Amino acid sequence: SGRGYNGPVQVEVTVEDGRIVSIDVVSHEDTPGIADAAINAVPDRVIESQGLDVDLVTGATYTSQGIVRAVEDALVEPEDAEVEEPVEDEPVAEWPDGEYTGIGAGYNGDITVEVTVENGRIVNIDVLVHKDTPGIADAAINAVPDRIIESQSLAVDMVSGATYTSEGIIRAVEQSLDGRGVIE
Image (cartoon, rainbow, N blue to C red; front, side, top):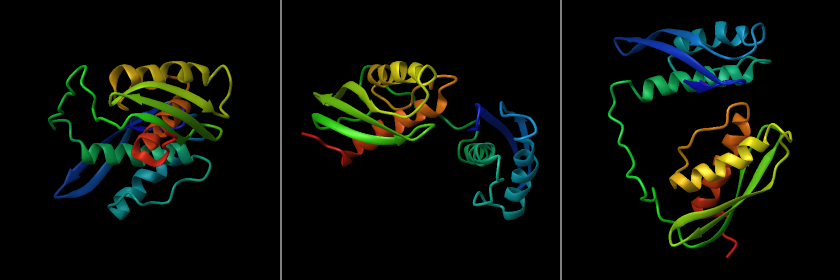
């Protein structure tokens, strides 16, 4: 699956003799009529090129990207692959103590966060700046930082209806912890 405009786009990819022979979009939440152009064209482009670097459909860019990401997901992580579960209460990584800032793309623009690390663990995440729609983005701004702190991981559930804001917060935290935004 990959993220489309309104939610996940799920595909089924068939590979024979090392080549992609079919891609079926089995479910999506994007707007009929708008998403249809991408659903009809992008799978054929991927099959024709045997790659993911294909032209997206203008007017259905998010659906196009969702299809490409879903195909990539299907090819990179087969269903029978073993997934290692993280150990609970143990940080995924230890970061140097300090305050960090990071920026991620939200729905209407950049989201800036400040992340506080103490004893190698994330203890606080503040969303400093965002341009996403009040009322819609609020659910993600309130929930996603808490989920990251609780799990000490960026692999957290996004808030339905505020997916882009959720992803922007996650990307901003990721950027800050990459060490690019130390405030000290």
